[in-house]
Every structure is written in structure tokens, then in C-alpha cells.
Image (cartoon, rainbow, N blue to C red):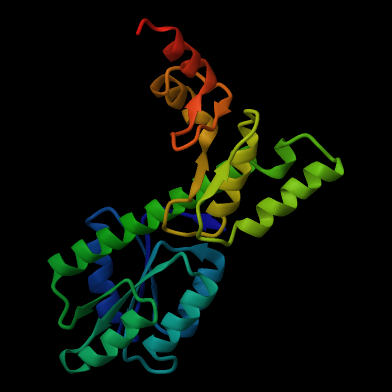
Length: 242
């Protein structure tokens, strides 16, 4: 399927409106296609990928609301801008609830449609880049990058799959093996969550903890009514002059 970052499809059952908007957006550097019905728009989207679709809400045949729902079902990555008449503001709000990127009022102002379209194209481009980065991370830190077919390693893989849906933070301990937290990060990215993953690798902070504590802690001695004190620190205290 052909892909163009600034490809825009205009859908309206009035050819004059399609021609007018096409001229405005082409002057701004957009690659513009037109369709005169919802059915024709969906057919064009099967052959070509569009970053943004601008559609009238009230059209003959397939209504704009139905077209919006079909686009979000078949092409969820495409941003949809709704054009609506002044008296249909409630329908425009409903369209936003159904996944529309934004709406503009008719008669359309050239400056408004240009700014709204540019914003929609930019957002679609950023989302496409994010999807590319996610695929790159998945490839780099997938389970296939971790050597090990033993039962203990398979148990680790299964544990990662089980905790991936959880919103809780994950504490990783043990010998340093970067692929292990990487695989967990990769699984969490596949959830397409906007929140940052809660993976915490305590090994990265061990040196800092040791420095703040005066070196790796020694064996602990529990004294009656006293705090836990490293035994080597206790010996140094006993040998100091009274």
C-alpha cells in the first residue's frame, strides 16, 4: 500500500467543495485526493493510505458518521476531521466521541481548515514514527534475542508474559543481563499504553547504594535494643579509643 506522510482525502457529495478544499490544501503542500461518497472514500483507502480524511457530516448515501466509524474500524491510524453545518454542533461532539480528530464549521474558513489539517497530519506522522520505534524495540529486545531453551528460562519468559498486563512496578534483581529487562520493556510497549512502563532495574543503582552506605554491607548483627549494624563497622567502633 502506498504511503505518503501528508496525504489527505477530502470526502463531500458536493464536487465544488472538494475542488475548493483541494486547491487550498495543495497550496500548503498537501497531497490531496477526493471522493464524492463514503463508499468511494473507503474504496480509495483500500488502495492508498491517507494520513487524514476530511469528510462532510451530512452526505447522500453513507452519512459522515457512518464513514467515520468505518474508517476508525478499518484504518484506526487515520485522523478524521468532520465538517458540519452550524446547527449540527451536537453531531460534531458525538463524532469526537466516536474518534474524530477535530471538526470545523461550515462555511469552512481557509485558515481554520489549513491549521486543523496540518495539526492532524503532524499527529498522524508522530504516531507512525512511534509505531516504527515500537517495532524496532520489539525486534531488538524480543525473546528471540535471549539465549536459553531450558525449563527455568521458559519459566522466566512465561513470567514476563504474565506480568506484562499489570500496571504495577516490576523490580528486577540478579546478575546483569540487559536483554531481560529489555524484553519486559518490549512487552509493555506492545500494550500501546501512554503511561511509562514500571520496570525498575535495581542493579543499575547498586553502585550508588554502596557508595552512600560506605561500601557493600557486611554481615549484620542484631543487638538487644539496638539498630542493625554491619559487623565490621561494629568492630571498628570497639577498637576506637575510649
